Length: 238
Image 1 (cartoon, one colour):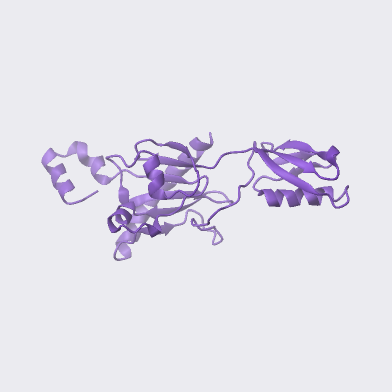
Image 2 (spheres, rainbow, N blue to C red):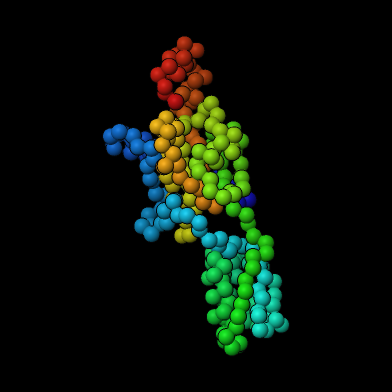
C-alpha cells in the first residue's frame, strides 16, 4: 500500500515536473548534469545529499523499553495507526517520526513524573527496512531494499537499467519530506555518463523514488516510417 501511494503521488507530480525541467533547460544556457525543482515551498526542506539519516518511527513499528533500575516497567510497545503508543502507568504519547534518541528522551521525560532519574534503553524490534522505489521506464519497476550507500545510477542498474523508451536526461528523484509531499530533483543521467563525472551521482535516502519518464521518440514512433526513426536515432534524440 505504501508503495502504491508513493508511486501515485510521484506520477502526479512528475506530469508537471517534465515541463518545468524543459523550461529550465531552455532558459539556463548550457545543460548542467542536474537541476533542482522543489515540490514543496518550504525553505527548510532538507537537502537530498543528507548523509546517514537516523531512522524515524513509523506506524506499525515496535520496540523494547528496558528500565535498568525498575525492570517491572519493562515493556514491548507498538506504534499504533494514529502514531501514538501506550505506556505502563503513563498512558498515550505521540511518537511517530521520532528517532531512537528522541524517543528515549521522550520516555525519560514521561517517566520522570513517577520515577527518580529513570535509566531507559530503547531497542527497535520490528520496523520497516530502508527501501527505494524505481518506477517508469526501467526494466524492472518495483520496491527494493536500500542497503548501504546507493547512488541514482546504481539504483537504476538494480532495477534492470533503462528500457528502450526511457528519457535518460530527465530522471526524477523524489524524496519525501517530514511536512508532507516530496522534494524533487531532475538528474541528467545521460550527461553524467557521457562526461564520466560521477561526483554528482546523488546518493539515495530511505523512501526515495526514482521516476524515469518516457522519451518523446517512443511516443511518436508508432506513427513514423522506419526511415524517419533511423534518422532520429542518428541525431541522438534520446
